[in-house]
Image (cartoon, rainbow, N blue to C red; front, side, top):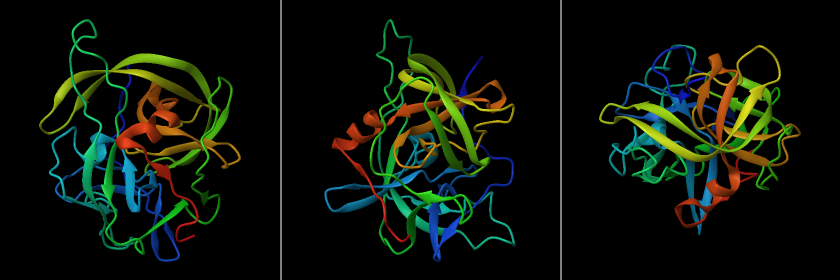
Length: 254
């Protein structure tokens, strides 16, 4: 099993709206890039709202300039039956990705980025579409093997799985425009699909994984393997400790 970053430049992506606002789970990317990832959630630090996703989605592996507009849907996902791309946020901060054998370089703890939301009226904390969607939960889950989970994503929409592994260290080959390297990440969890279908595929990077009842947050998806039946997740406690401390936002534009 070889995991890979789950961003894509192929496949038609999905876009979700809630009351005319861009909903979480939608296709997104920096306006300068020809790939697609997922707008995972709205978070707050102090009084400022941010969008949350992966470093390799918002920052193309450390290399998108601060202030670059993030649009939804992404450029490659634009098509006649979708609204035109609009700016949802502006790239702000990353958890750095770095390469090197663990004997020499400490493994990374996360693949995350936040982007400041200039207009809170443009986005919603709702996840996915009206049928089967739910509001982003702000309560973190206690992670455990066997926990049933679900997520909304740009490529595979609503999928369900089961948490399988605890605190593994894995290597992922990243392939950004200016960053091509093997990155070791420590402390990831894995999710396995409940059936033979994929839990996540390229383009689902950044999706917020939640408990099966939608009431608690589990983590942020950042990589896939085994034809998408296995997904790798940054645990939610680590996500919320990043960037000096952030909180998931619920009941925003729902």
